[in-house]
Length: 205
Image 1: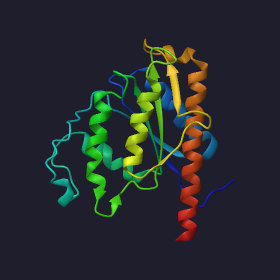
Image 2: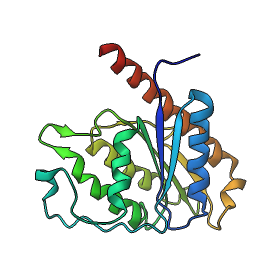
Image 3: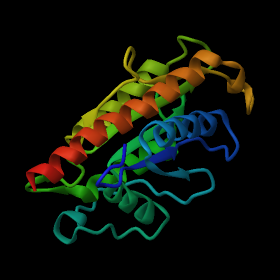
């Protein structure tokens, strides 16, 4: 069915690997969103990017801009352009990677006295660990908490918290059919809800 709006979904891969399992899962999610809801998608890898941690200088509260000159600035600005955001991370010490956490903290720039500029965008998480209970849910909780901090709409894969998979060696996740399936379901769910919200906002406007 033809739409009178463009649906855009962004995928962020928090892995320090360029060719890793998290990338495969996020790509599967984006592919499912594109195929099922005709969404325009973009994939961003944090591997190899320079992302400094927030220094709590507080200057962004007044200027709306971060003074740190690195790759994070251009990446976080992408968040504003998309209706749905999928964050993926391997499990590191029971949570997201340092790269992804630093990026999350740098979105402080979107906080204003009126709330977050990311309000009502749709967010979904993907996590991959060494075992089926290898910290994926605690990693997803960190991702979900980030979304909630920005007053975003958090979705899962329809039955669970989000896309979860088991793998370690690069590419190994291709053998985890359940993990691939859950990531595809997550991608479709993000696109589905983002579409509802986008359509409703256009109708109200």
